[in-house]
Length: 174
Image (tube, rainbow, N blue to C red; front, side):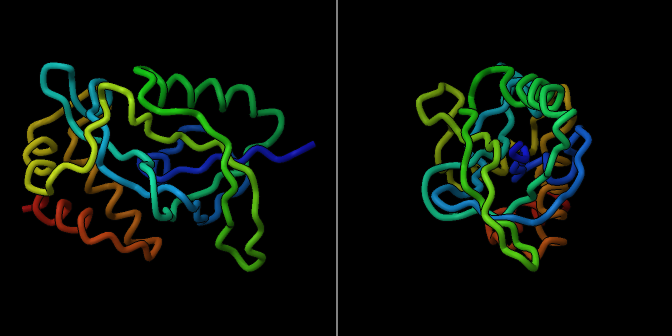
């Protein structure tokens, strides 16, 4: 029986919300982390949207891979679909990822990729516009600045550098 792996790149890094057997830094190619999704639920509302990370076309992204025990697959997938797919802004995909451990194994992982055709797709907004949107947004899961700062903090702990996310986190911490 094949293992179920989940690839997290935003809040899943620091708040997975499901049981797992193993967690390992990992890289996925062909997509990159981007603050490119208007949040209408978790970090904003339709009237005052926030911004959350999505995986957008091009590049590569280092995140965390979570190995889920077979007995938890169904509940984990149900939980993730409820959490990530409230407005269907992400496409649930299965991608090849490389674990960044001593073995460097390649595994297939469930990965949520931004749907560029969805009305919540923000694209590559200028940093100052991202900052203004994030500063004033709050949703069911909390304030948008907290989300960006937490993600940045955990990226930094993993040794992942992203100048844009770092700049936003610094500005939001002032």
